[in-house]
Length: 45
Length: 190
Image (cartoon, rainbow over all chains, first blue to last red; front, side):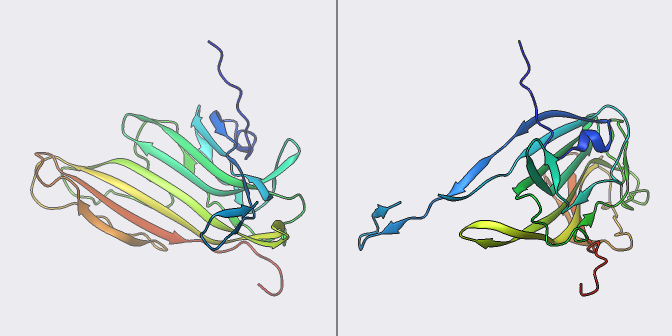
């Protein structure tokens, strides 16, 4: 079984080598502009 | 679509004693081609549990920090790799009382990311509201009385001692202490 690679986004392993990264998650997100009609239906994105 | 960003989380364990003295919350950290800011660090220590660290943050555009002097220093402490509940940053429980034991001590250092945006995209950011929180879990052994926790200088008890399982033979208490952090800032109009 292979272990997934991890990304040290915050560089703690370089701040102190005794911090050992075990997992990471990027959690990407974005916002969407939406317009609604009189019934609340989304009519434009 | 606008404001695309990432808010990563990293989990760490300790392979030896580790120092917090070089960690800054607010400064840009480079990972690959992107920049990130730490907004929360949780140090979890407990009896019979290896210490662990969870760090969360958010992506920021390169060079968008409003001032390189605006950040929070994580106060200095050494997290030992022993699998014990650890007394850090002045928190102590030597006077807790006979028959009571701290079995879990979790510490969080956090701040809020504030952003100036144009067309939904961040053009400048700062950090604010820096604080530390200590959450202690106290195990009783069926004796009389209640445990005693005193807030050290700079800390206040924000959630008083509470008994979570009064119907149990061996009771458990919890208490939360908070300390506000001061900005590391050297500019002339802070």
